[in-house]
Image (cartoon, rainbow, N blue to C red; front, side, top):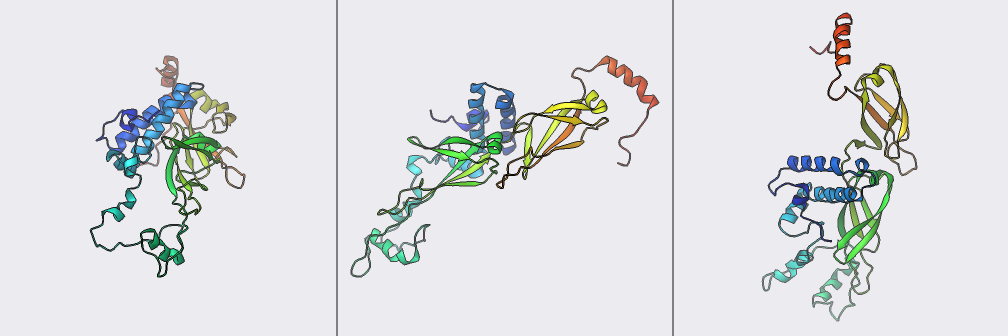
Length: 307
């Protein structure tokens, strides 16, 4: 099935600013994220569609190319633009001398052989050039948890071609994966090029990554912050139990060792949990009455030193 127009997916118009696109994405991602809709395949598919649309529209170059009709909604090159980089050979003025730029995979000693491809060989003839195929470049958007835990994901290269890509656990945003031999075929039995897959990681509704560490804001009740106790904390590798010390203020940071992103050496970063004290929704009259009596007898200034 062809990908939908990314503007339509995010519900923005073509004149939308970067901030408007980012805001629309975050709102939709929070609503449809698989973590918030466990077992809901429809929400999972919708989230992937939203992430793909954001990947295209958040990239200035890809957005401009899409608006010009050079790539489709999935980010794949449209057939009429697939070989536009070779137009210079066809559109040069009669008698105009071509300027040659060495391409990847061509050795200097093969330069003379290149002219045989265009009807000019060495004096006395030359052997047909054997040239490595060009590399193909793609971008693949994955969700945050896939990047942390790793997975296999299918990348659509063209309407009739796709590749199964292994996402290594702990992959970073912008990291490029190389798939050997999956690029353009070589010339005259030359080796094929590679497919270079740039990984884009979609933001998560409540996790964020800094290096190999994961950061999370955790809402806690007033009683949990004041009295302490055990609470359940979600992490990318599963929920864990954590003890909150008594009299913990909002903003206190607790560390969960080894619950961050995997590293190439087999170790893992940590998870840092920032407590956010939340009052009851809708208010609590009994709590308010208690504080009206308690506050005058126990004055303190949490803002001292700020003036």
